Length: 460
Image (cartoon, rainbow, N blue to C red; front, side, top):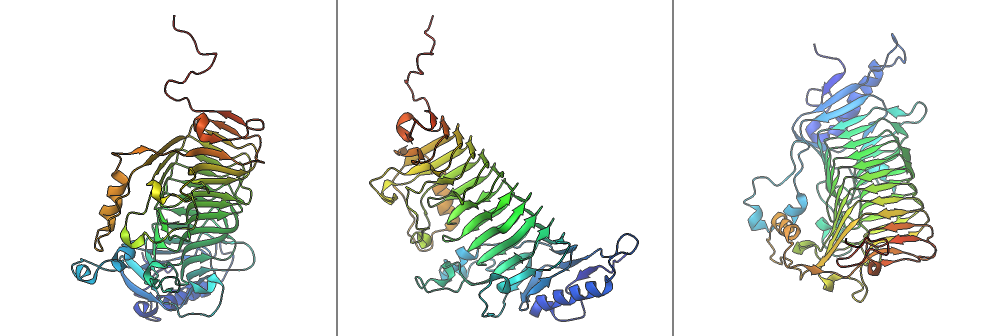
């Protein structure tokens, strides 16, 4: 039986979804509000609706405004493919490609410039509703939001590598509860997902990459999850960012290397970063600012190396290697059992005369850093300068290169003066840890041939 609350954008009688899917979806939402006007009918009254976007290209000229709960917008494929590789591929080679644009159920963001300064006005999908209760249970699933082109050529004349076009994919402006964003593909947007004041938000199994910023949890929030996503922001944007959050779980994500940071928390407390794989071309992979406290960072893999793909080697995030790969401000955080790899040619270290810092505690007390395995190596870089060198093969070959490596001298942990009552255990040798032992606790990682101390048993 067909439900009156199930809609297909290609079968709706108002508008043309291929010319402006935004106007069509807004018309459907208006119909839902007319038909579901009663708040309480048989202990129900407003079941919401599902809007289906079939495979195909659908231009969005009008912003979608969602102001009802229990709405699901769903497609039949996230359709992601790399636009960055395409825009950096010579034209003669591009002529041989099987396809050149993202596909699946694809929404092409073609909003006219609004002249407004706020990000909400530039979003393809805006969720906003005043009053109580909070808007709840809105879902986005299994379709592609494509910003098409980056347009800011002011800095270096290279617009398609600027990561700027003023466009946002999904913007949650109002306090919201139990939203889900799953199986989406977001590409070539200055902001992929921006969520304000979220409670019990799930961002899971999405492909959010080649965006200026990917996942941003702003305002405040609690009890949410960012998991199992493939994520990669631009060199001056956030891959995963959260502020003023409690009870946030970030797990199982694979974060690509070009973001300004892999993950950044600001004022986040009692949250977990576990079981992720982070890769970065720059320092500042993980940043805690504005007094983050009682967070767990455990069982993650961090890799920092050098950008190997010629078209992108001129970009960086502006940080030097004294900033630290992990840069921590706050109290009583636990950094336990992570694997941290830094493999980089010494000619690319900044400043060149200083040892790079791996974990840096800038301020705070009671932080616990234990049993982290830090592998620091160096090898002459082999950037592929050929203009048509494949991004995929170049980057994979760089990751797989573990031969002919020699030890890189680093500061494994640096605890800045004024940071007290911190405990650093087995995360660097005596020579690799900079710490005031009068006000912090320290036990160095034993080195080969090193005596373990007076308690060591003599052989019988």
